[in-house]
Image (cartoon, rainbow, N blue to C red; front, top):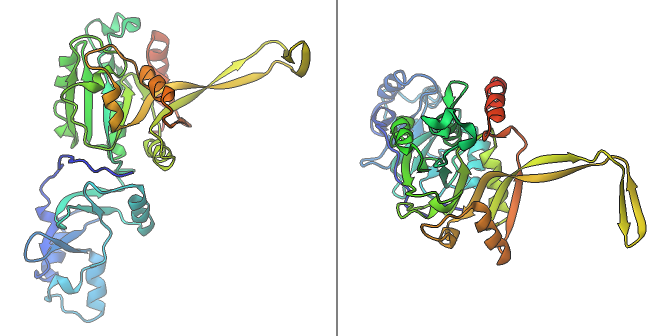
Length: 359
């Protein structure tokens, strides 16, 4: 599954990382020396096209072949370098990059110009999705904490619940996030701003009235570009593997996917299974495992149009519509940590659990 939309460029100044292929290897060594840990240069042709990468190792190998350090860096550079194509990256591309062991990977546009650099020691993935986080609820069950602070900004481990989620999305390469806000929404806007402080884009879908757990997705400002949209509640604390979730959705060619969490029910009595008045089996105090909705979803973008405008509408309403019309859905069991912080008990549990969760 690919991202075909016109996502915004998250560019910064890479002038220190670029060098002309006609510059000398000596100049390249001096530049590399200023770049710190895991330095790499991107060599350009006469214009802005990236035609190769240069590391200390490339120059050392060239010197061992008796190429002069005063020769053009183009004689040293790696022309068959690992890279990704902006707006056309999918999981198979990421898998190939991982097999090369590359750490710093340039993302190039259709003209081979540098858009950004991904450091795969800082990011675990580069998922081609946009995320919408539903952050407009009143949080009645958490009063009085939520009387003056919106629930998504309540702190767990010294950081707002919502910031834990946003930082995890960033870790998986999600760079465009919408926040659907209502109750005390200005506080959320003030805290996160436009996302530039975190190197991403954040936009706000303001609900004038409560629209349920997914109604805000149909907001007129929601100009979704990615083929798949990740939707989740803002009051979740989880270390879900977003790439594994997306991979499951993509590889099954599903129309929608729901993350789930196992919920066990233990029956304190022996259970008799029957057919008519006959007994077919007998189980002593069995435990049944059910899968509960974890409040995290992936939808193909086309189904946003199935959400009525300015109407209270829950994610479960959309899923029921998709089921009725025979659309393909999958569920993804969360193997790690997940907690819905809706009551005082969960909020206190989160304060303890955060000390041990591995993000």
